[in-house]
Image 1 (tube, rainbow, N blue to C red):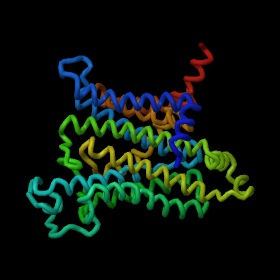
Image 2 (image 1 turned 135 degrees about the vertical axis):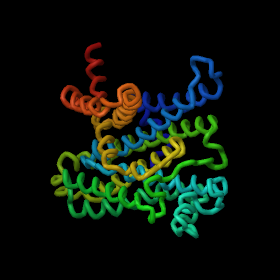
Image 3 (image 1 turned 90 degrees about the vertical axis):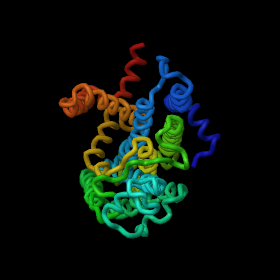
Image 4 (image 1 turned 120 degrees about the vertical axis):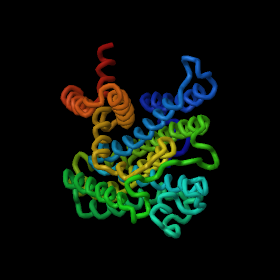
Length: 366
């Protein structure tokens, strides 16, 4: 990990990193302030709805960062990162479900409502420990990381690359979606988890709790960005880019190609899992539809629209596309998918470097 000195040096040396982190710092401070300190009648007041949207967008930005880390810099096109995002979300959801206790519909102090409804008599072994936040936080990191390690070890050692790797990652996400839809898996079936009450004793319905979650999400996004930036600018990052551009040549020169790709893939999966864990308490629900392959494909579109291989462009693309989705699904729900497709096609043709490609053009024009 980068020390504080190296992180500050990195930010000073990179104007884009400075601007991105500054924006996130402003969001972390101003969003809670405008929600808590301003009266509802003020034009500067930030409603709970907008606060939730901000948190959701930043979680998606973290997921886009994770995909850009491996696609933009290592050439690994994953169409299954929604799986890691969802696993992190489910781990946090299990903790939140255990916190409901006797306040559920059926009043069972141990079993979640869906287990009581399905006539389960005892808590499954894999639910043990989730009444502790530290345990859930550890699982948020361990499970996505472990799955990525096993999957990556098998595929990279077999030298599966290109479109074949993309299809396999998509199949992984789809298989997990089908598994989590089953009621006998013990994860709530097609309904998933919802009706959360509190986190660490704080009421999730209170604006103050939501404001803190938004601030924490902004901090997590900034930390993820700085970590990714440190990795891609390190010696290992230069090797990864060499592998992306000429894998056979890098292997001929003696670099352990599979190891570099594996650990980058694991790091990316962990970032996605943390994003999912932050997403669930803010949105208030997690279900198997989050595993759907279409969600992973959408993330790739966010990265492409924002600017592949820039990190901050991926985050920008996630925010822009999801804001457009929020607006269009409300104003013109029947044309949303056509608008997304048209945006992707137009950006690909006219802005091959994504929205971030407009910055050099603007600088040259000025």
